[in-house]
Length: 494
Image (tube, rainbow, N blue to C red; front, side):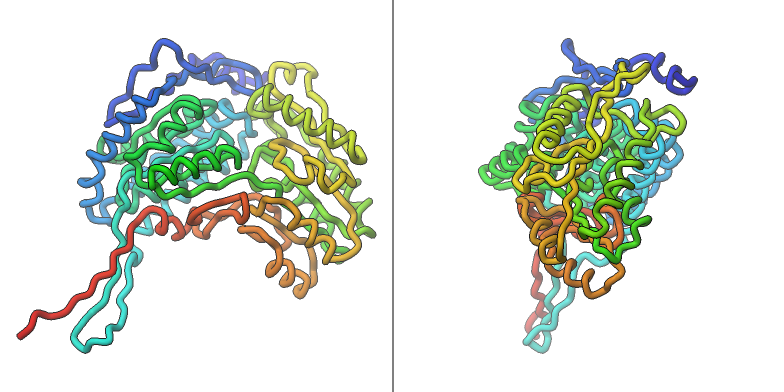
């Protein structure tokens, strides 16, 4: 173990406490252990919240929201600029926290922190942009205007795989538009999200405007999703849980924004630049150990290039250096925990039994790897198209390949699943790229780029069972987070 990793392992466990009305609640008698998936070290202890804690957080948010909404938008934006500066100065420590909570390599964690800072800065700039419109009236003297007003209290349920970026891109736009937030962080990686909350408070965010609840999804997440005191709920996670949240919101009347699972396809045409295509496929499939909703899962390759693409992908995947994310040069971190590893391995074994094994999945248990939840990448060829890995989200470093004989066949297979989050094509043919963009059933479409990753100023979200409700990021969240009011103005009669 290197000195940085050893020093991190020796640090005392941190306390992840709930934040309600500006007060950090006691940890409680039965905290949840937060363990480093790379070596099993105890990183922290997290509060095990309750439905009563959610009630208190929602009440605090409702009490604080009117005064926050009454502030000029520019004042809210300036607070966000201060918070962005604080987060940027702390990026190294923030990134190391991410590595220790969920395992991704330090370079990826630093990139995530940079992305979160960029989101906060973008949202600060939104305070200066128009949020209404002026319409012509059929009456000579009248004006017609629209204005956007805060919705009220927004509930956020964030996952563990991007523990800094996702809480940021869900919570910060809500704050900008004058809402109060109740943020439920994943019990597996809450410390990274709490760092965001700490920076916002240090920047001057009033007590109660951002409240943080912790605990398991079945108790705390369910209580928040169905709470009658929230006006909207934003969730990122599995399709199964998303359906339950959508149903709960339907009962309470809250708006719902759901970013759900993906089984993301990529097409490699015969005319593609294979160097660029293979690099993008590899990064899309195996970054974050495949624990990414926009990760590349399925690849359809022109038959005459199939063998070459498969060989190159196998060679690159086999060469990945696995290890603790704080070790220099590590490219493949652990899965979030050993239970997740066993689920992914079982899915890979089923795929390998049904298709052609190009690179077999296995537990990585040599030396220091035995202390963590490591597995090797899996690449399987020519699976039946109704196989699990061909249809469902396997949340780990697993990739399936098929040869195809035409663009039509590739597109039909790309659209075959119930998911529609992200899709990519690799080609030099503009006409082929245009046909793909027009016909693929996905919310995010890329030409000659990996399926994963989005920029903070453009809308993000999925089609079909990969998403529900308004989009995230850019200006799109205004549809979730504000109410539109149409105003008719006529001068008083003379």
